[in-house]
Length: 393
Image (cartoon, helix red, strand yellow):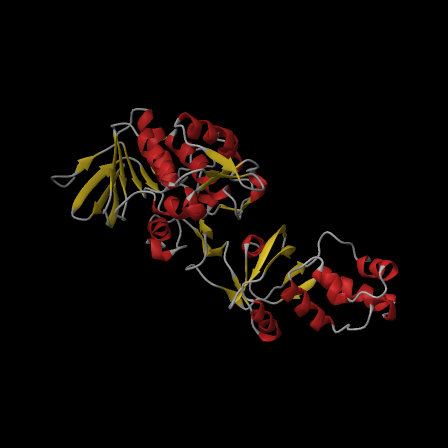
């Protein structure tokens, strides 16, 4: 090894959620760990998450809330480190928290409390080294040698925890994939997830509703969610669209149910109860006026309900229950909260996160082909995979 090289039991690339959790667990087991972070401070993505309050887990997190080429891969780690385990850690550090909606847990105060907690969990045997820009990684026998910002580091274990390319303004890159390929690991083609969708063609007419939000049901592929949709200058966003974006594939449609609390016969029933009402008025009772008017205009039924045949009202109800949009694409990694795809789970042990064909090489967190729903699920995967790795180094 080169003179001046610093020796450790493990080197972790990336001081994000997964990397710091892994470092803390490994350090608590007595290992000497170097965490190399390219940014000036650790946990940058944690700090901006949840509007600065960090949606640090979800009470309902389980394998069914994750997408992967192998949906069974996440089961082991998630079963061994649960939301309750992380809540216990948060409470041990006296961090106040609250449930927002749908099991989403946030800090009462700043997300910085979570970063500070993770750093505090790291014993003296863990060094977090920032402004460390990795320029080379090689394996010499059973030792990994890492060159970063003029320094050299060596260890028998190397952990890839550099995340995916989502949110490039935070310094995110595809470095994890390049490194995985260097060592012969397969990578599932990454694409943006939890990302707004863009609209074109006839759907462009909905851009006039930019800023309007409404609770809807949205479906794409195998994903169906009930939350708010937001119309934007570019297309569709809001929690429900971010959720289904993970299931949407180019060329396919997104189906939106605009009044999910009503059945297909609701307009016919309203005709019986209030024959002088209009479709426009009926929609305004459930949706923001601008959205109700836009939908009514497109349905083209201006007469009082009492003068409209039941068949036409059923047809209108069916269209409102299955309003189809054909997205032209997504707003890309720049607006994506996470990445779908990544280092193939087929290359890794689900118990330890170690590469099956490269002893001593590990991958955790968003770098791996495991992607959670919106709402704290991706953090829970970071904690769980970090613990699984940290306990096996």
